[in-house]
Image (cartoon, rainbow, N blue to C red; front, side, top):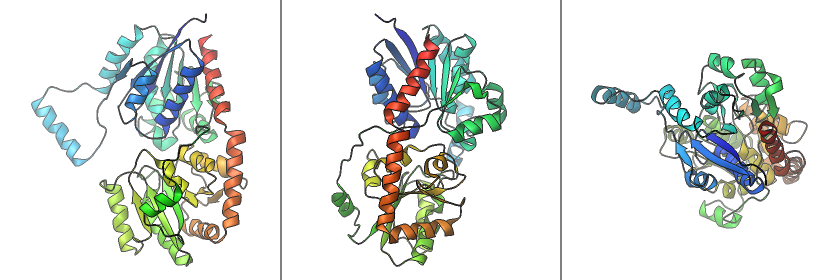
Length: 395
């Protein structure tokens, strides 16, 4: 019988977003195929997927929930009040030391961190000669949202293996932070072989008041500057100026209660395109909405290898993105999708109009990218690569 191997998995959060979803899918497969692995989970923050992670770890799960990094007025001033009336809260370094000291007593055979944010949590284990893997899905903006450039440069060597989520991520780690190429393995994100759809197209179109004559363009994204969601109203305006074809634009993500979406809605009103845009709050069934898109857009300024892009490919959607934006380029280049010059909304709008005009062109792109996904980015192939990486460090 194979010896039990104890693995600690660290996730930056349990939110319903790309990196945690990908990690959860990986862990389910690891649990099924590697019966001798005992998995504990450390969540830095909780979220909607907490219960799913708890099931994987047989409820051996810890939530660190360190400080709120928001810089909003309310949070800044709350911190002042908190400091005035209550004892000083633990710093992140103090919390890391306290939590990891307890975990070091469990004698793990390997520690797997998911996202760059977990790097600092893996360092105490690496220093005790415990093999560590950090799966990095972020490019420069994402990485440096958690740490300074100097911190990454100083510590990117202190890990056994780095799994880079795309070639763009690997090159960024090497060129910007002087990471050791020998420690980096490029293993792309993947989507499950079967995609679940809850509502059929006619039902969802009816629910959203989309007429039979409307073509649907859409994004599925958190609402933030890096994701380019601020560009939606102006892009829709430019598309409407270039064609008389009926269309609706679905902005899926975030919440109509947050500032970014409220600002977008005001921009849409001022630009006279509010009737063209449907804002849908972030929910547990994004695949349903992507399924009704005729064209899938990525407006990101920087995105390593977005999971929603792979979902769109699985559903045979033509994909339009910006050049120089990260992992989308390596996925779509050479005629597998449409790449507009970086932040050039005029060119992007023109490319979208060409797709709106030509159903055959849309289908051709959709079929090509779906075939590429199945042959080059299959779930089985990529999970096998990750399992092999883990096994090599456990020997």
